[in-house]
Length: 380
Image (cartoon, rainbow, N blue to C red; front, side, top):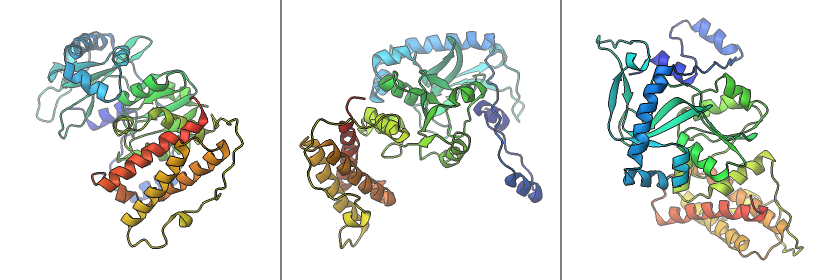
């Protein structure tokens, strides 16, 4: 297996120093954090040759496996995208000698030689100037070893798709590939591989001065710490999660329209603005609606509150969907719906279980709200 220091080097993060010196720890905590991006080291030629052979085998195997193709299509990827991304599938686990791949010999604590693990799963390559520099496998087996495995010897440089100044940073390569499929002409997608990963030197340079959207899985234990890093070193970045705070693939499965979700991020960045409609029909509507105005006068518990707000949200959605209102009124109703959404976020613990009919209705309403909100901005 991979050692702690090697794993930190792979993720381009500093290993924590162990020790009990409280004074030193306090001094270290009081000093400003400095981040010096590291140079991503390209794999050696032997590694690239061996990795290419394995990768070519995996690509052939995927196109002979209808079940695994359907798995990728279920994540929103088209056959054309799967081909363009050169995705593959490894049917079983392989263990190779490190020396045969041009890597240094490493010995386990029990004295056995460490091997390179090529696990079964979806094989995801990363290229740099048409050279294979990284292999990551999305394992389909649920166990304690984790979903994603980076093949030893891979570069720490992340997958970067696109060349736009608008950057969406996600964790998994499959999510980056999906975003690239949806909006390759508008955004750049970067897959860090982990919430704790930091940009290497060239990626850091590429990000400087860009519009950055951070969309890491909110369930990841390191997501909050990661956001602090991005907020400090890239102050203009915004944090923008999906409605259920899951990753992009899960959001797609749950019915979120990712094109309008992307448009929402661009509105938050101030890059695009709603398109004025050529009509001046005005319907009286209360402006600057407060959460208190939206809440029922008597709500004995949070469930009643959720039901009440859901009904209010559905009412607004029906009005927006009718296309009978001017742009200004639609925008006001959208803001009102936004207040409801923020209120529901405040009681989000009640929204974690979507198995009951009431919660399914709520989830459908929230997804519909996101889709309908951006009907008024015109084509994206």
